[in-house]
Amino acid sequence: MIVVHDPSELPAGFAPTVVAIGKFDGVHAGHRAIIEKLLVDAAACDARTVAVTFDRNPLATIAPEHCPEQVSGVGQKIDLLAERGLDATLVLEFDKRLADVPAEEFVIRYLVEGLNAQRVLVGEDFRFGRGGTGDVALLRRMGVEHGFAVEVVADVSSAATGCDGGRRVSSTWIRELLTAGDVERAAKLLGHVHAVRGVVVRGLQRGRELGFPTANLAPDLEGFVPADGVYAGWVRARRPEGQLGSGARYPAAISVGTNPTFDDVPERVVEAHVLDRDDLDLYGRTVDVEFVSRIRGMVAFDGLEPLIAQMHDDVEQTRAALR
Image (cartoon, rainbow, N blue to C red):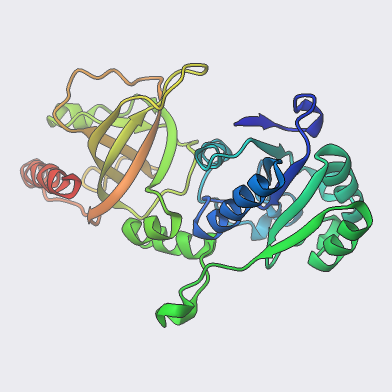
């Protein structure tokens, strides 16, 4: 998949295209419904597929006080979109200049002149342009004028089940589940295991001293960090830039929190103990930490012996969860 930040960066002759526009935070089931329709339409039209998205939630620029934490970072989002089989993703920098672009100009600049879009797919709540003045009705009127069709892809929801009030799949719902530590239900809505991504840094080395060395992620990681606790999951060591493949994956017991037994960690930390490996050197490497299931909440222990006993139990529960 080609990743560009302006349509001019696309190869000559890339168009015509079928385009899907959205934040695509988490690339969850609702987003995948749009993307699957995009792929089918592009095959029928013999066109290229393009996702148009942003380098941040637009609210981070427009109303930062109301901007929620993102389910996935922009790097993670790009990788998830690539896995869907798209030809290209256009990642627009949502700064104040882009926020001030009138809706009509956005359509001309990016969809008509930039991508030569033949079809444009959006979700039911799609808004665009300065002040959110652009909507599906405007997009359709401009489509008639400039020769592209517009399709609104219906939300994916639990309405047919009668459960959870027929709630639509959204990043908000996923954040709520992750905040509660329910990574398994979040994975069902996402369609993939939730993960965070960051660089491995040196911690206090306490895990090594206790016989459970951990890979600690730097605080400026990508992705929504779930509730404090211990999780079964995987550590995926990413390959250096330019190398193909996703890198090695290792089973791990993952801890999220501030280490209340010692009460000397001021910020929440994500650290992963790779099972049965004491020879890994991951310092300075970028890794994905994938959360499969929650083992327990975070508690303070009365001394080292009960803590170490619990850590042994955490490892065994992790083995069982990952079988």
